[in-house]
Image 1: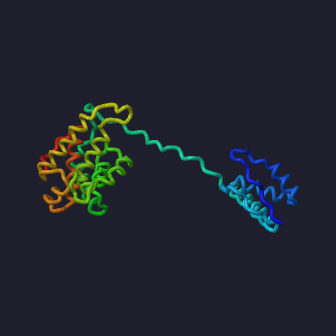
Image 2 (image 1 turned 120 degrees about the vertical axis):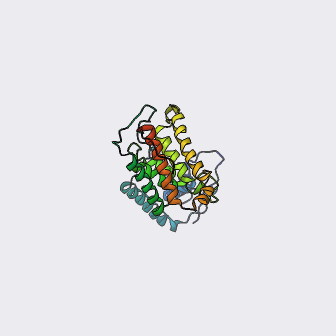
Image 3 (image 1 turned 180 degrees about the horizontal axis):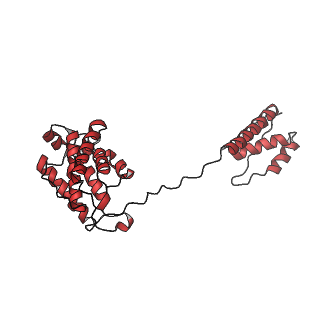
Length: 255
């Protein structure tokens, strides 16, 4: 025998007991009423179709199986908590005009190491900005090997554009290192950027004298597209400038 639940008025709360009494009065069972209740509450059906008595057992088997699977899943693999926002590591102290480091007469050694590492990294790994950053981090004692600066420089090589019409990546990488050690801090934008601007301007002057530009395409043309040499030279210039400022080193003539 087929049974249907009568339509309910809009915004009228579904009454399970009333539904159960109606179905039982018509010859149905409480199990059928339970299934009607489930369909009305867990689907967007406006009307509940006929309920066949032969589907009653299969319906509850499926329902019981789903509940068991959900319980097992919840026990074996708890829902993870939302990940907390990552915080940056404590930054190194920013350097000022008054900071001086004792390099024990190793100025020429440090500068040569900066050139050699810059050349090697660019020749083997590519990515002029990152290679410049890595060379200075590895060669100059007071330049922190900060992973964040290295990561940030990963997308500014090759002039930052397919056409190479922006700044050379090694020039940009040098500026990132200088800004990292003596620039303006994030907290309340404290401090000044005069020192970092002054030092980076010196890097610009070296580029302008050697290549007549800081643009990638111009430097590639002037250097014969010898990017490893450009990176090594940029790391060398920047190391000289940093040592002159923070270690009293007297740089040799540009080359």
